Image 1: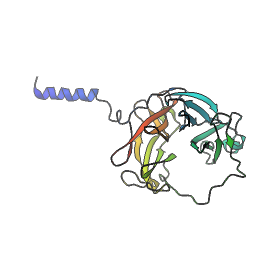
Image 2: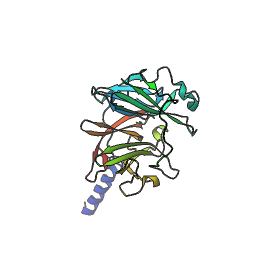
Image 3: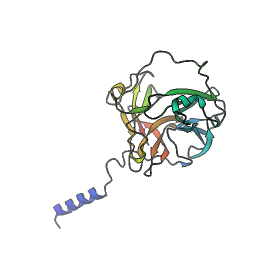
Length: 274
């Protein structure tokens, strides 16, 4: 057999057995077990070292974990419902996109009430000293501190789909993570996670190439690959050993699941998943 034919056969074989270029572009989610069906997850580390996760669902669903691997259902934030939100939900008990944090002995939970494609939404705040189901106190809108009149745009795509912004400080930079493209279509979802950074929390934020995030900029951190479809609606958990990206993704069967990956930073300070 000629050398030319052997070379040709090797090239054909390589093309057959080599995985698609995007198959190894991103790592798979780290192993998690238990009750891991989630949408729009956010996680906080508790003073005792355990974890409390909140996610979109009826009355806002809660889960707990002692090791960040095995998660268990832990009821809901509002087991008796949240009637103050129904003006925005058309009577539905489903509440969206919680953000949970802990500060000075108090858990804070911001969440949204809306319906798809209505453009009628509201943001609410509840607090709890324990984080447990049924212990959350809704901020009274009549006495709560209202937002000031000024707003600062920190990201935009000129009409393209962008949502779920999350800002976290690491070193000298504030990093803004956002989700581009389409959620909530099962395995056909095209969500992907993008990032930009700034030395000021109010921006301006730029991606690695220097493009402003208010002009559609964003450096891709995570996208669909293999059996991981539409990863997005991310949050960042700063834990012992470093930062973690927490997100949901869709499996091949369309079920929305919890994804967690460790974040590292390259020599220029840009985040990447491991």
